[in-house]
Amino acid sequence: MVNYKDIDKAVALRLKTRFPSIDIVSKDIEEGISRPSFFIDFRMINAEDFMHESLERSIPITVYFFPKEKEKNKIELLEKENDLQILFLEDNILVIDEFTKAEIEAIEFEKVDKVLQCRFDINLFESYEREDTELVMEDLEFNERI
Image (tube, rainbow, N blue to C red; front, side):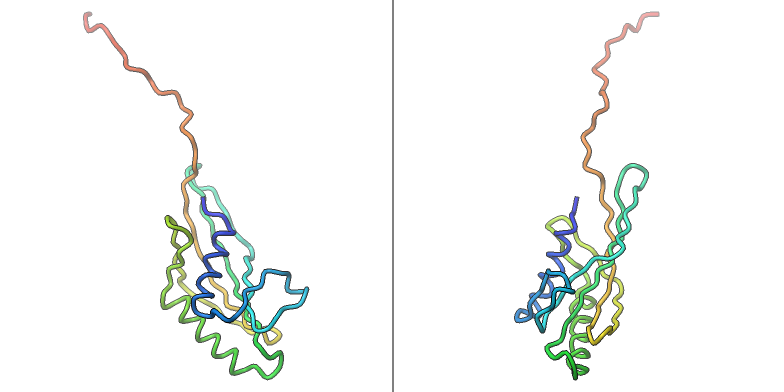
């Protein structure tokens, strides 16, 4: 089963391929952020059981971009918005591991306090990894005479 750390790594790898010189920070935003940088966050994950057979998860992901300049950054934010749109929609399959891929169908952008927020959802459907504990019937021998 895919864990959230693997999803975070997949998003970070995608960002690093396009923006190798921009840091991806993992410390809390309130602690202060180096600029320019990205911060990846998961919000309001929804996980549901499907017929006791599989796990269905909807994972909203937000990528924050902190521009180089705290003020006067309109052009830089517009450029990153365009770049992120290309990065996540043009090639919209996010490879999480060798067995798991997720499709990104739509992206939303918002600027809050001069920080660009790029939001998208991925949906995963995974069968539970369970051992079969039911007893299996042995070969039966029976007498066909009546």
